[in-house]
Image 1 (cartoon, one colour):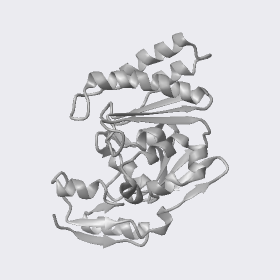
Image 2 (cartoon, helix red, strand yellow; image 1 turned 90 degrees about the horizontal axis):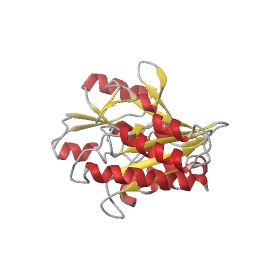
Image 3 (cartoon, helix red, strand yellow; image 1 turned 120 degrees about the horizontal axis):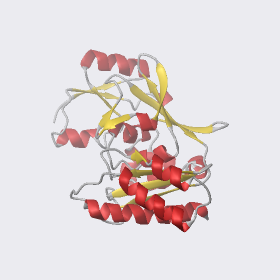
Length: 270
């Protein structure tokens, strides 16, 4: 594995470097470098985003949290603002890998990876997050519209994720199920947000993490009775598309999905 590493000091410089070299952006490298080592990706040029100061930080505004794309999961784990206003994201960040990974891995890299098992994407979907992107111009896109399929986004090769914007939400929860209790890849993860109704998102059960809109609508129709919850549990199985792989079977994922939905609904109802 060999490549030429470029270091950008501004987003504009990173974009120009990408256009000149056709290279790939690298945030922390926890995904890209592994894929390069395994031959899953090829890049002669890598463009580091680490030196771009505007991509860092967690800021609390009147109605939203703004988290810079280069903010690490450790920083999110330590943030009282995230814990209070985006608890499901805080819970997810705390469960990614071990301390060494969280010290390097970034929220922007997690989003850009477009991996079905990316633990931070699921809570961000449930939280109705918006992604701030710098390309030919600066624009925003709802996270739910960012993904085309597994490992695919709508981003052009030169576009840079600048930040993620999250509406303030005080009641939410996240759960992750893996083969072991720590350092595990999700065989299924789920986030539930309670805010003028419910929003449910599921990861590792479809080609991309999915916002389960029909399930959310059933849960939000009125008083949440056992009958309504059972109806939602049946509906969520129509909104996911799990497969058998080395992490779990599709049948197991379906069972876990129903169990976690019931458990998280109970948790946000406390």
